[in-house]
Length: 344
Image (cartoon, rainbow, N blue to C red; front, side, top):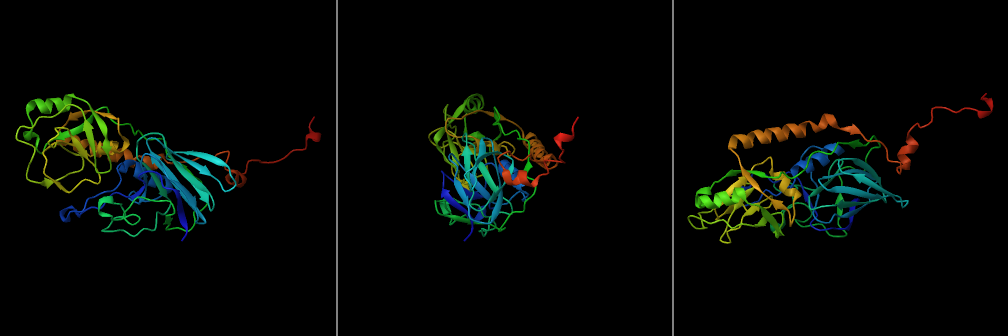
């Protein structure tokens, strides 16, 4: 099998797309990218549809070797870049949101300079069969991706295209991927299960992401939140970004691999426009929250979609890197010659 061979798997590298929609009533989590905005950016740069499955890298990125004839890739994320090593031994650094053409024998390493999730998209996508309509990896149920698990050394990821055409590479000016100083939330649906003082504490305090953080959720350390009616409810649906507070009195923000139902009261829900930012945080990150209305949340989501839609007309041809000799050979860098003996 040819494609991209995993030389070093990194930590927490999985195949993800925009998620497995429509199966929560059967107990199947949505999964999908922690930072769907960055996933969409990586796909845009290589020319894929938004939801094409890519590799999600967390904490430590993988190293991949090209066994296909050629491939075009791009990385996207708040603190990511690529290190390309050509078959001849030359090294090349590729920033986020810039595509690069790789030939058979080349190797590429995903470099992460922070805790943010990063996405490696390949032109044409991976030849991975969807499960329940999605290629997203759901680790707890071993669904999707590569055998429902994280990548390991020796895996070969098949490609839908055996080779990538030689054309101008594309670059997108780095989008604003900063984590908001205060994440916006809509209170509820069980904010009445908390004392008024607890609501005030939640909105006025700061919390730190603990080491107990993964694709399912972020456990936060900080001020405790007192329950007014106990910490058990009749289990109900869990929305993306739900913030539940169990008997520990400390909040847990639920993310892509969240359970479909839960029996702890939820003090608030992170709005969908701010939810991708939680894919850019890790243990030690400080978070704060601000309450907004449903109408404000809807307007914020429309604004985010408008910003992402504006990326496409901003795509530009990337200037060739001086270390890319093959590309330089293809350019007409000399328009003519002169005989210096004929000069006055």
